[in-house]
Image (cartoon, rainbow, N blue to C red; front, side):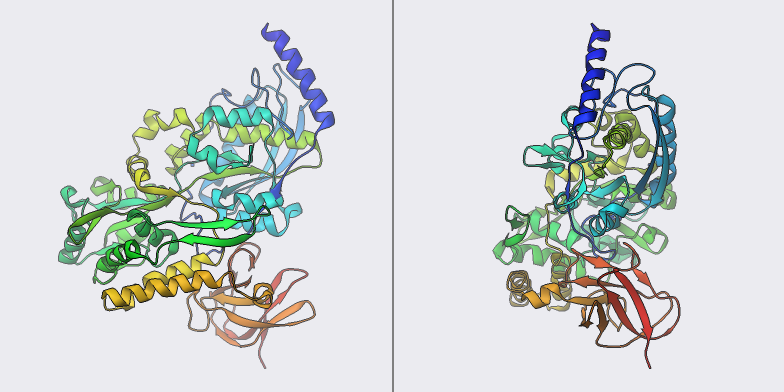
Length: 548
């Protein structure tokens, strides 16, 4: 019976390859500085053992779609394929070894010649959207970018076999992250895009980890820092979610943002603002999520699982992990909330269905249980695979355990307008600069509310205009400098005294949906000087022109 099924599957695949092509649609970009999803919200992964769930053998692999699989020593997909893979820098070596393992273990005669390039999840989304044809064949990206990726035709829709593969192997939350309508796009890589609390047990007693107030006292008494990047919307929004607030962007059928349902500016929001003020008004507060902080006088750092290995190296047996603490306002405790999300593996639509099918076979392999467990061991990434989540390898990782505890208080990160990252981070800045009174905190929340509403009254002229932003002109990624258009070239209205190493980008509509620097990365100044910044819309090239 098994051989009969295999023969039927092989015939089915043959007809599928003759009849089908790739599907897809797309997305927008995020900035290196302000996250949506982060290698800094993510980012950190030895050759897989088996082929259990690779869409081959008895599981038809794919496709509308470009995936396929047959039993036996070779198949209609047998041959060599040249593909480019984008993944975070820390994952490149492991990804290369996993591709080699796929080549040696798959029974379809597929050989992948892979060029693995270090591109972060956020930059991968930006690069794919800006130029799909030049993009990678497989790419890691953050789930909040999915709808924009679909709209741009940058990611393939999964066929029936591939959909069955992801549904049978991954958690409900990660499946929701790849679903649009009734269809699935991309493959879940992780379910760990969130944050937890790391602490130095030689400074912080374990019994204090549930109380923000006690943790602040411990840090102040020891002259140590409490690092929590609250001047970043991805982190400070969690405080509002912890008191029961919500922030939901509404889109039309084409994916355009048309309104926002957000109650941060409310009585509940005031409670959150008071919680933020407790920490940011303390001398122990440090606006950072950098894992190096424990080597620089930190006792606590709120960051993600991607920092686990580095922090363990810094603290050793003194490393403690926990979900976030609670804070008290008027006698009531409120547990700090957080965003959560997934890292995904996308497959670019291909004109040759055989290339697409081979790419999908590789994608299923790279996201199977064994490969995900290797990322747990090597990078500390939390798996989306159901069996991998309960595997002893995963359960032995204290950061993933703490993150799973925090998930009870987390909110799935939705699609977010690109301007929100700048608007949201200012809440903490305004709270920090206030006197902590109710009136001052409400004023900060009202300013935030007015700013998000202004997104929908922005003129077409402003939406289409390009501006310069960066660590320039005395600003720190918080000011847009105007540019003027002449033909296809935009030039900054101002000159900037720049130093070698300064970084900048140009962006459209004062948000991060579409931005350019050096490819997906920031533009880095090579030599000191006074410059105009130019941007060519046709070539998307950013350049510096010496003034005078």
